[in-house]
Image (cartoon, rainbow, N blue to C red; front, top):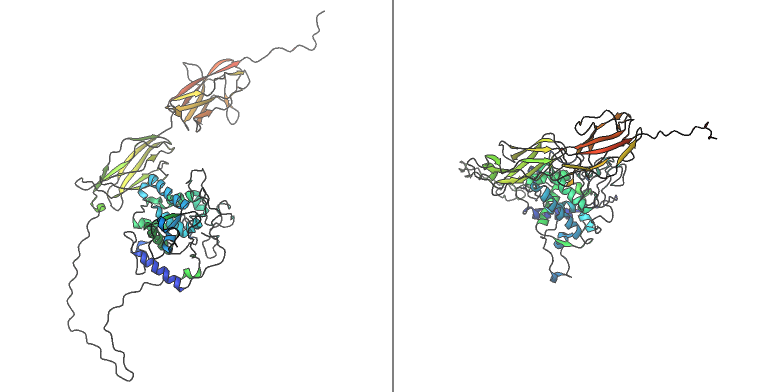
Length: 577
């Protein structure tokens, strides 16, 4: 969205009329289940504010202003043919063109969400519609080769003066404003929302709201939260309203969504059309004109001639006509209506180490009472209980549509660090039947081998300290075993692995000698480096036993030699004669 510069555009009645006509023309192509009034506006019954909407401060954008331009009445055309190049571009073709890098970002986000949240059914055209009303497709595609906007795109500061009041949450890190927050970037995230919704869409290791790849992927995940299925009209409306909680915003985004669904094409970066009308213009704040109602049909009357008597009214019929109530046919049951129960769709034993992805996926099958498979039914998988295990993408809820076989397969489970049993519950959306519970087990990270990283002998003089610290690497099936628990103990001998009460030792925080260390963990490379070791007055060869979760162990030899006590020559001694 263009930076707020104080000047507000004025639009006349002609613009309002064109806008109303544009919506009316688009209403015929609205997605199934979306009701519109006589002017093509989405009706309130289909566009209620989502109870889960937003981050608590007006959704993704803080309810910042947005572009209100509507699509042209003429339908878009596909990519212009070679023979048409050089000819004037019609308005519909120009509006349907999306800058190449911006379009690529939308499609890449759609592909990633199709993998990580397949039950969401996010269309890239929805990202394009939001990108259009939020920033005019990054100001017509004014981005560099990496997808970062050439100049920052900032909404007005949310100081409560005609806008929401959102005081600074990022110390100006994203918006350069340390007093109030401002919406940032091509998808207009406020900093407090970006802090948890931000994503790295271009793989450069940075989550930048000014980068169209990052912003598009973040918007996709934002719209796909709460288990929403965007192929369902109600969920789609909830998701859009959670982005900016405004009925007018919903209608504008819906209009562009349907427009882009009819066809679009790629245009060079920097050549896209930029909208001109904003929701904070004064004329946009007027209440919409109510829908006209059809007047009751009455018998026309002849106007009275001045000086003449009014015509006598026609008396009503003595007997009202008999009306036969129309015959209504009950609606055919939907696939969801026919589901009687869920059964396991062939899920194998679910077990994974902490931090790993489960090899098997959960599958549930929807059936009728007689066991017939039911396709095209939404099954919601929910991870319940106190656990940090999630589905791929970091979500705890996933909604998946059953195939013709009646089977819905949940996204892959990713084990968290909390070990133990995890319950995943499958339910049928829109049907009150008993859910189906699956149990998955998260086991601790383990290693099957541990070895020193060097072969240097570890020696020390009695009463001194070892020059080299003990360092080991743990592996599991040949790969580095990260975050594995490690214990180190100075033991009495090969046959007696109890803790020794003499010899080398570690120090705790108070400087007290300890000969057993717990709570150690390997790093990302599977390496653990023990603290510095010291020697008491005992000499000889001692054993340090290092063990890992999973039972891998290694003995480390420690040699303590006698201290150097050679006498120094006496100062009073005199040489022999």
